[in-house]
Length: 240
Image 1 (cartoon, rainbow, N blue to C red):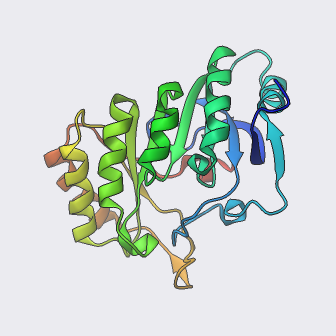
Image 2 (image 1 turned 135 degrees about the horizontal axis):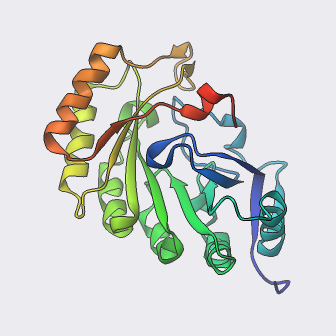
């Protein structure tokens, strides 16, 4: 890579199994970029929200690390996660096509609130794993941004909503309607939160009761053909 190629602020690069969404159990190499402008109450990677003290790496170095971790290419896909990777869109415009040239599928994990940045990189994404951020979790609504984001992502997207005991019925309805209105309609993953400290209000966040999860699933299934209830499996497996 030429010396002028952009640098990315990287928290870690590791190999594991995908533990969330519709690709649960798929072996992947994870490239975690540091920094995120959101402070979601259920964030389970708060140590990666800031870039301070993290390593700046060029694309060639990231590719070397990926090759060392998976020399035999048993992991077909590289997950670019965070933080919020789209905050480093300039780096992604170099990294994502380089990964594809190296024979890897690219899987972008994102909060789905920066459609203008997704436009810069979506061509080189094979999968866009987009969160819906409910106002009660972030402190402000992002429904308009989510709607535009899905329009940009198109058929590459699937959507995940983290459900807690604090998630309101209005938020569930709004999220389901947003997915139902998208064309094409993406799969929707309902993810019960893994118990975690509430970053906004203190105390512990817990998932909805089993009865409420069943009711939410039933409601979503009436509007959507592809709805899945999937917890964070990597936490159950004891994997990163």
